[in-house]
Amino acid sequence: MQTSNSAITKEMFEHVGKNVSQMEAIARPSITYWQDAWRRLKQNKVAMLGLVIIILYTVLAIVGPYMTPYDYRTTNTEEIDQPPSAKHWFGTDTLGRDLWARTWMGARVSLSIGFLAAFLNAFIGVIIGGISGYFGGKVDMVIMRAIDILYAIPYMIIVILMMVVLGQGIMPLVIAMIAVGWLNMARLVRGQVLQLKEQEFVLAAKVLGASHARIIFKHLIPNALGVILVNLTMSVPSAIFTEAFLSFIGLGVVPPHSSWGQLAYYGIQSFRVRPYQLFIPAFFISTTMLSLNLLGDGLRDALDPRLRS
Amino acid sequence: MGRYILNRLFVSLVTAWVLVTIVFFLVRLLPGDPFLSEKVTPEIKANMMRYYGLDKPIHIQYMTFLKNLLKGDFGYSLRYKNRTVNEVIKQAFPYSADLGIRAVIFATIVGVTLGIIAALNRNRTWDYLAMFIAIVGVSVPSFVIGPLLQYVFATKLNLLPVSQWKGFSYTIMPTFALSLSSLALMARLMRASMLDVVNQDYIKTAKAKGLSPFQIIWKHQIRNAILPVITVLGPVTATLLTGTFVIEQIFAIPGLGKFYILGIQNLDYSLVLGMTTFYGLFLIAANFVVDIIYGLVDPRIRIAR
Image (cartoon, rainbow over all chains, first blue to last red; front, side):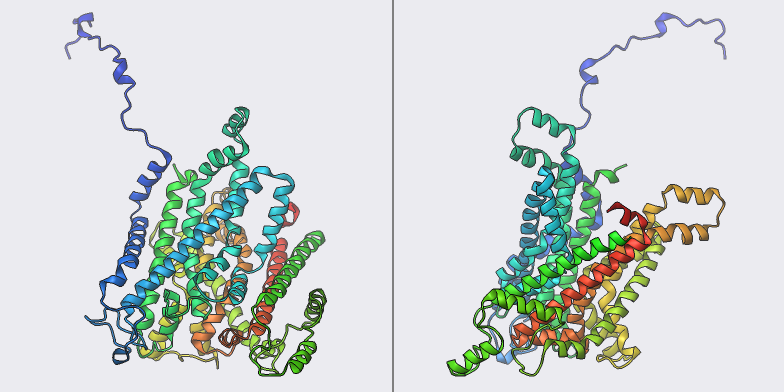
């Protein structure tokens, strides 16, 4: 190259300068923890499929019974045990009741019991676990020993006992499920609170004179919310399963009300001849639990900062 | 170790006491009295109340109840004068225990194996397949799996007997249906545990020593990874034994679950509560045994307490 005698002169350079206003400009809008989690969740196709199925079932539970002219309680002796057809989309049961209507009325019961029990469990668990972890010392000792003992009694045994005493129905079911269902959440929240309360922002809040209630509800619980939410999502399918299990052994929802577990219970009596009576409710129980489990897995991945690289 | 065992024994005994106390007072909360359905004169009824000790103050009844339990008497049936809970247990529990033990063994072996396969093939086809089986297993209840198996293998293919309990071929479907959810749980746990262990220093040391991959996996990775799986054996036993309620119903197995459901359907609450007490105490005992085993295989646990 012929660069030997052409010296590098000052004119060859151009002063670019610092454009301070542009340097400080924020390239992308900043996103909060929840927006970030939502973005991650949206990328997880399997979890999103789960979410879509849950929303679909919820919508069908609301509008489903009105989509057919048949009432879920009305028996019709002329149309018993009809297979699925254009008239009765899911067929009819041994009393001639339309199974499409019964399935979606059952969905209302199953889904609302599942979500209600899970939410109430989370609510009680967060309060008790929060108090136990935050105050520590003797309070913590007493609460944790009580939880240890209750935890050692098998969950199903307690629920069955409660059902026998309370009688059948939707409210007894929910009460039986929340009697000992909060234990898990309480343990989890206590662990989280124990970790969080040693951190500097809690100390700062204390120094600024924040009350106990303010520290618990404004600082500790919002920070533990990710873990709480994941556990909540995972406990909905187990609540749905418990309802189905109890209805299946004859301790749950009683006719003319219906639930998926109860439909499966009646379906099993004759499933070798009419398998659809069992497989339709069984399909909805299974896919609901599957969707919620997949969504829970996805939420855990999206919300757990330790898994982020 | 002695202190550890004593500690666990104490916790188990307190738990058992809490359970039987809850049972006792819940029975007293039941509406009506046990002889409501029988058409008898008030005198005879008073006699019967005296016969069963129901006329005494509640704390004396409670002490009698505890004394009877200590003697191994779980109560009586209100429906059948000549049937006690103990007789039902003696007659039916062997079937339930047989099914339960088969399911525990099957779930543990297959679940752990599946978890190992998944972890060793992380993010490859085998991993996805194993984890797919696991999530389906967690999500599909046993009372769905059972009839599905019956429909496919008995009604359609005619390979296995539909129901009853008369030999090995009869046990295959109930065992599988009962153990699937626990199997899935164990597979997920084992996989996570294997992946956790693989990053430990002792695995690096083993590699540096030039051990073969088989030796590393078998002697170092699996042995350490299996510890968390042992902790869930207690809850898994509980799930499997209560799971027999529906499985026995579906497969017409003459075990305790069948009597349990009959008791519920006949409103024979004293029988149901007696059997519930039995189940609860049995499972607390099972938990105790699992705790001891865990303390034996992992010294860190018993030192920590």
